[in-house]
Length: 287
Ligand code: PLP
Image (cartoon, rainbow, N blue to C red; front, side):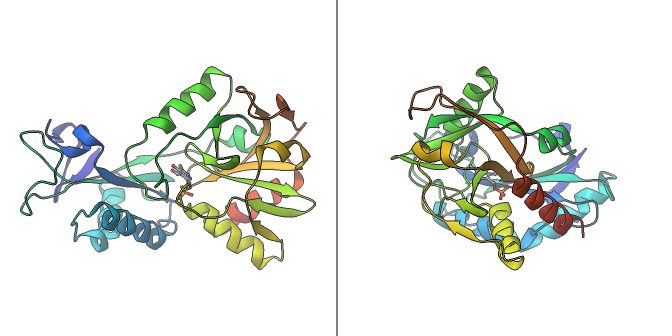
């Protein structure tokens, strides 16, 4: 497989990252995950805007953001993925600090950039029958709106979900649901779509944004409001959304840490509204 690494298209095996790279030492970097539909990259501009926001927040000077779309299409071509759904991964770190040193390196230090692409199939069964999730405490930092590669709490929470026979962990912070470890969270109540509002504590998901737009276009009411886990059992449907999960129904939520009084919420099958939103999004992506 070809990757783009620090200005060159090279074979993946030839990609050598320094032991002093600050991505390795400090998780000092940002990333993006973009879907290639087989015809085009989906919402590339939105991903690039979010990447720029992250780079600015981290004060990483990377002038090449506007070249990433061209690089993406070149990687699709070189890896013979034209026509095949794929996932583009972009990671930019602050470059090297040798010797290891917390402070930013000198201004002449170049950021490290890696872009790769892999063929990707949706988890169709999960999209059809739904998944189980757990609730877990959100002990991430207070800038979850920035897509940094510092994902240890997300990794630990997702593994905890797996260890409890679930496919996603839904974070709860200060008495409210924030999001999943790698997804945004939506619920349906009385025919209205609910999702936590944008804040420092959730990632402004591209899929979330598109779903809200599409639902409003078809006059499906959407409320961006705090969702308390205490009222989850009174809601009708649940779903997680992301670039890779699209809209995936959640049919069981286990409160394994007794955050609420209700140990398990079960829905016998994915809800009708969830499946409708799933169809609307799939059609929009594949149009
Ligand atoms: N929330 C978190 C924590 C994520 O990591 C992701 C995606 O990786 C999302 C939400 C969904 O974002 P998007 O729809 O842009 O893929």
